[in-house]
Length: 95
Image (tube, rainbow, N blue to C red; front, side):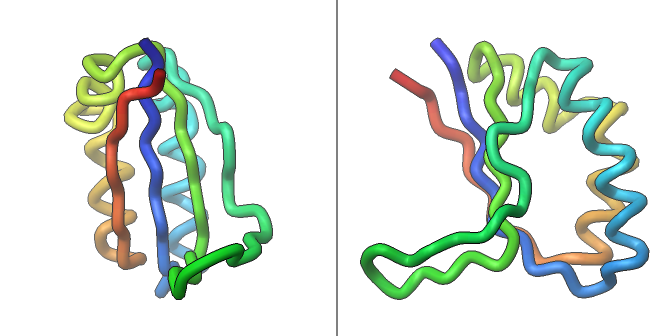
């Protein structure tokens, strides 16, 4: 069953954040993931949630998504993201 990582990111340091993007993408691929959404325009249809930069990753399984998030490959990128952005991130199993 597929798993999705849904991320709302407020980028605080755009120049440094570019380094994060360059490091994160290969780590996602290495764990079988792919970008479904990567920062495109959003439209609020209901409610008051206005995402900053919305990213959706798809992984083949929850276990692979968890392994990616905890991996040494993503660890370097994660430190940069945590320094240069405010993030809300959730993992959800697909149907």
